[in-house]
Amino acid sequence: MKIAYLGPQASFTDLAVRKAFPGEQQVPCVTIPDCIEAVVEGEVDYAVVPLENALEGSVHITVDYLFHEADLSIVAELTSPIEQHLMVHPDNDSSAGKVKKILSHSHALAQCHKFLHQSYRGTSLEQTTSTAAAAKFVSEHRDEPLAAIGNELAAREYGLTIIHENIHDFAYNHTRFIVLHKQRDMLEVDQERSGDKTTLMVTLPKDRSGALHQVLSTFAWRQLNLSKIESRPLKTGLGDYFFLIDVAQGMDDVLLPGAISEMEALGCEVKMIGTYASYLLAE
Image 1 (cartoon, rainbow, N blue to C red):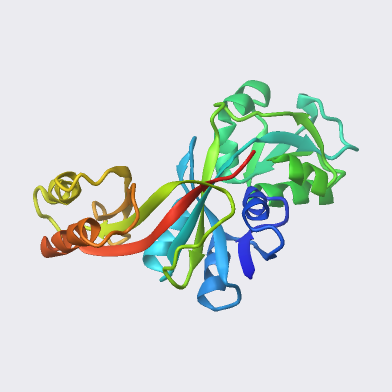
Image 2 (spheres, rainbow, N blue to C red):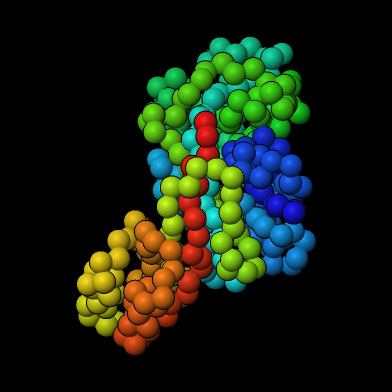
């Protein structure tokens, strides 16, 4: 089984794949769209990409690409704890005044905002495609006063020294990763199963008063619990949105099909992007 993931090696996505799919062939990709396209084009069997972080919310490129570009299904969800550390090349002076630039993924930088503001105020921040890409860059530029934010595996993989541990702003820091596949068959993972979900993307009929209320009612009267609802731009004009909806159960024979049929009867466009099991990865 070939699995694409947001790389390079030692990214948080890499960690999730190692835990969930030990022994399988891993294919690192530079960006999230690269991971998704690798499945679409048949280069790999599955892709694992981040979907949501507990501190910073949704990874918008993942949501938007699944809506606008790719016809893939979520076949499993992996929830993993996230620990962010500040690391430098061991040859460099690690004092705060000597670090001139800190690199990491945009979500990682945002997760550590308070620490960076208090301890490295005024230091330049630069976004990279992943936390591992930041660590790799720092390792390759040993003569520059750089630091990276990433995980412990990245520090080991790229020979960096951790100078500040657990710098994320809040203790509970977890990320949801999704496993994508061309088919809708649920994927079994040898980890702790925490429940089932179904994810829908819903576009409302244009300029119809009360449309969102009607959509939510289709779930409410069937007693279908929603664990998330979020709007994203349709990219067709200001005020045009689609809604990402997570239902806290798998697809059944009656209730969810009925809710989808009712939404479509109201004039909504409904795209189901997966019914799948959720797994908690061990720390």
